[in-house]
Length: 216
Image 1: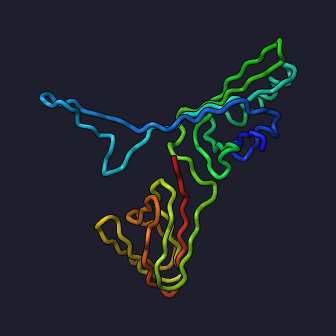
Image 2: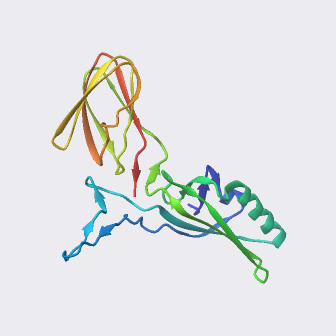
């Protein structure tokens, strides 16, 4: 498969750009520490409520073309008008089912001797997680139990009911229960964690769970 980059659904290859290199360094966790006089070790705040927070993701994509300078300048102008400073969804060939989301900055240069033009697309404020392109949708008809599998990123699903229902689930050692009428709801306490999340449903209708998974 030819290496490519897709930005907001637009293939860079289709615009005449060749992908020369990409750089997606591992995301870094946020770290904060307080030094207390008399203590040999600091108080660390990198984990709050057993959850790690991550810094914005950074990445760089280098695209090239071979041709005359006039064509290169036109291609750069077209790319700038489409993407410069735009909060964008970026997908690479190696991970076609995932995308990252951030503000793009563009830089360009042209070598008159080799007739090679370079366009560098960089981002310093992308979300830490790679998101799944497709929403995960699972349904349960009537009373019973359903297993909602989640990739890594904690997420709260949208719950849609055709009739009133009672949902029951457990987080750690704590039990939760929620009665909902027909309609679409977001229940903050119903947060899906990595792996399998079991929910017991009592209803005479259909219950649909919809959520977007994410990973590092």
